[in-house]
Image (cartoon, rainbow, N blue to C red):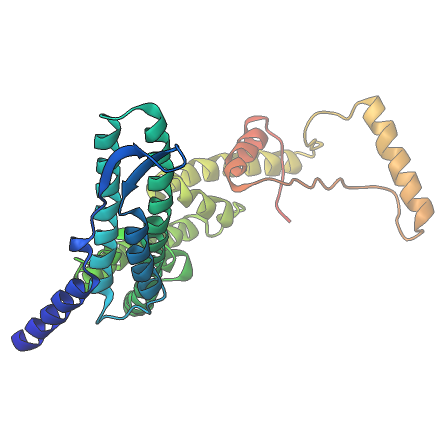
Amino acid sequence: MAKAKKMENEVTVAETKEVGFSDLELTIKKPSLGKDGTMVVGGNFEELAGQIAQVVQKYKGTVLTEDNVNYVKAVKTQFQKLRTGIEMKRKDWKKVYITTPSKLLDAMCDDLQKIVAEGEDALGSQLEAYDQKRKDELTVVLKGYVDEAVKSHGLRDEYACQIVLREKFYNLTQKEEDSADDIEAQAVELEKTQKAYDAGVELIKAECEGTVLVVDNYIDQLKYKSAMEIVLRIKTDKKKAQELYDDMKQKEANGEKIVIGEPISEGMKATLEAVSEAKNAEDGKYGAVRERTLWIRYNAEQAQDILDFFTNNEIQFRFM
């Protein structure tokens, strides 16, 4: 294994030397007048641009593999150093010479930097694509660990979807077994949460058994209340419901008229009669209205408020 590693290093060194970026350096001469009387800034701009362009064309289409990815990273680093070197030369030269040559130098350096940027961006894009491919392949492996953990701990979908593939899982320094252990730990905690929820459901069902209370309304409250809080509330609601039921049965035994809610106002009574007559005219099978059915649409958080409203106002009701 050590021998193979040495050979890999030898290849990298040889290829880096072949690129020869360490020998590429911008040279800028003092400004002078050309034959046509215009200001000229001399240097190795064209020669350097040609050398860089050759490297750009050679490596920007490189297909990355495990064998050459480290080498391409080294090439990209050399592009960065070259870019920095050009900027340093530009700034040092402009500290000495006047504005007109400086503008000319800017234009020449900008052209040179465009070529450098082309190579740097191309290699950067390839490295990003290579890393994304690595992450995609790793995601498949990590999801395999998730599936195993979900099956092992019997997690239902609503709990299984809470397992997170953390960002650190994709770090190059992260060990696969550490990621697997993290996923397993998440599954263990979710299994505890699932069992606690299921135990709460069983407590609520047992407490509501044999009553007129709607068990689903209380189960929905497990999302934001503990099971013991809900059970205590059920006990209170059962007591109120029983008292209301006993009072109604007593009135019925005494022959008293049982009135649910407040008496209907004359205006509301006329409206209900008009609706009833229209319905009877539409379909002859409907007779006189003897019972009113109230439909209520509500969400889980409002269930307790509705129950409190009926019981606190002594409105008799039953669930169909």
